[in-house]
Structures are given as structure tokens and as C-alpha cells.
Length: 227
Image 1: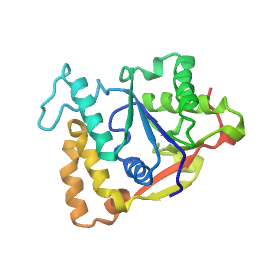
Image 2: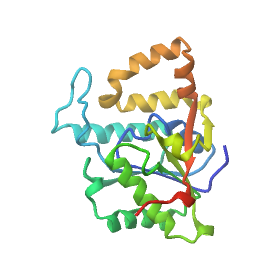
Image 3: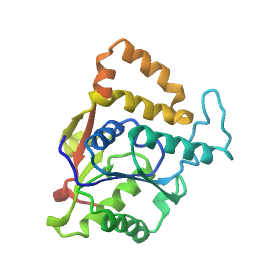
Image 4: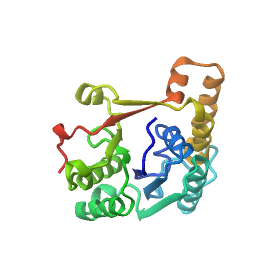
């Protein structure tokens, strides 16, 4: 994997990074690249309260904050930023405010790579709003000054419209960190981790392919529809 000057990861919720990006983040850290993770909310409205439940609606924000901090520690991230927005309301934030939030971080950090969701192909309204804000901020820069934009996509129709992944990172050397990042978000992932780990022990081909490879799409500026 190419060594970057600085990586900026922008997602709306704690655990958005865990399943599809945490191996890549861990590799960048291992390569000596500074990584900043800007998490826009604390996932206050997360549907899960643990399995069996150990959180309440009142305690969940504090628990998810601690889980996020633990996940960042597992990946080796030194610069974790909690941006203070409220879960399930990112789509209602002022577009200019969100764009400026991202632009300010780009100006400060001068990243060579930004990782976020692909707008139009990331399902959740908060995911979509986050991806759009990143695209708007990067688009403001001259083309020769733009960082690379690697996006996560998982809508049902995404490959039909934006093709197969442009980047597949082999993260087999950091699968333990990837699993431990997922486990850090135990309030949200506890119900699925036992089954996943059983499949990994069985060397289930589909599960191993998911665990050891992370897929990204470069943003298609020639198809840019973000407003």
C-alpha cells in the first residue's frame, strides 16, 4: 500500500470505520503515516444497547464515546476528533457549515488521502450527508491540489453505476487489529461477533475474503452529481 503524507478519515458514527476500513487505517499507522479520524457524532441513536443489554438511552452516548476511543487506540490513531454533531441529524445540518468543517480540516492537515462514504451509494442519510460534505470541500480545491478521495460504497446498485472497486487493500497482516476494532464497539457489534469469529475459525471463504480485503472506490469526478 502506498505511503501517504497524511490520511484523513471522516465518518458520521462510531463503528463506521470498524468493518470496512479499520485494517487499512491500521496499515497506514503501521507504515508511519499520520491518521486523523474525524467522527461527526457519538452514535447517540444507535439501535443496539448491548447483547444482552447493558446500556440505556441515557448512558449510550458515554459508552459509545468510550468505545470509539478504544477503537482508535486499537488502530493506533493518535488524532481522534469528535465533532459534536447529533446522530441521525447530520442530513439536516447546513450544507455550508458541514463543508466548512471539512475544508478547515483539509486546510489544517493537508491530507494526501481522504477516506469517507461514497455519496449516493452508502444507504444511511448520515453517511450520505457526510460523503457529500467531503466531496463539496475537496471540489473547492484546484484539481492539482486535491487529495485522493477513497470511498466506501455498499448500496445494492453501486457496482452497476460506479463499477468494481478501484482499490482492494490486503489487510491480512492486521486482521487481529481489525477484529479488535470491531470488538471495541461491543454495544453495537456484540450480537454478531461470536458468529463471525466462528466462521473465521472455520476458514469460511466468504468471511475470510471480507476479513482480509478492504474495498474502496475512487470518487468519479466526471460523474459528480453532488450539490
